[in-house]
Amino acid sequence: AQKITQTQPGMFVQEKEAVTLDCTYDTSDQSYGLFWYKQPSSGEMIFLIYQGSYDEQNATEGRYSLNFQKARKSANLVISASQLGDSAMYFCAMRGIYGNQFYFGTGTSLTVIP
Amino acid sequence: NAGVTQTPKFQVLKTGQSMTLQCAQDMNHEYMSWYRQDPGMGLRLIHYSVGAGITDQGEVPNGYNVSRSTTEDFPLRLLSAAPSQTSVYFCASSPGGSGAYYGYTFGSGTRLTVV
Image (cartoon, rainbow over all chains, first blue to last red; front, side, top):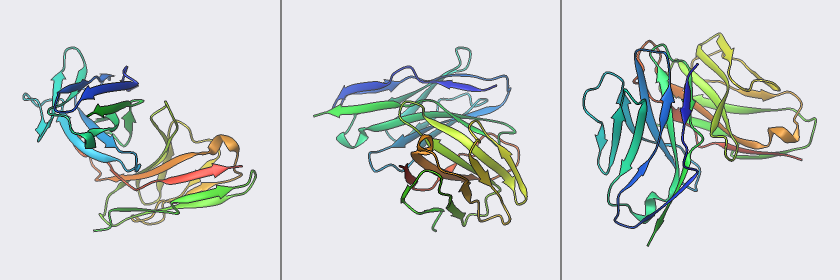
């Protein structure tokens, strides 16, 4: 079975500061993908960043980076230079190589303080 | 591109009523899924499909039916609505085949209230 754990229900960060959102996972698959999605108050699910299990470098997309530690089975999202528009729910998700199923964590609510 | 289109956006049902949530995608994706989102529980998989004519149950399938007669459409049917089915429902699609690198594209969601 695959499982995603996000242990931070809510986080606060000062505008322009960096913040790390934690994600750990459990899988027996040798090949898998890890994803982060953002859900603003409007409700849509927005894809942010992807990391493959065999990728040697951490993924980056603009102000988003994924701190991937395979041995520890963690895939933390780092947001640099936080903006007010970053206030949202953030979900970590995982998919196996034969994955017709996408597994989500329970999410972290991020609030950026001016 | 429309992507994944869900209708309706909002719906109020009475207990015991039935209804169908519509989902259509125009990206020729093989995989389609339905999720429900409840506070503090993330997104939970209801049903999924790996292609036309093929469906399977996810984590929370009770009270829901699906069918996939075409690649584009994947409707979710509530057979007899219950207050416990009050939730936000998301349809999502993804390219198929092996490979863990395909993320899902989500529809905008349907907010369902059962009274």
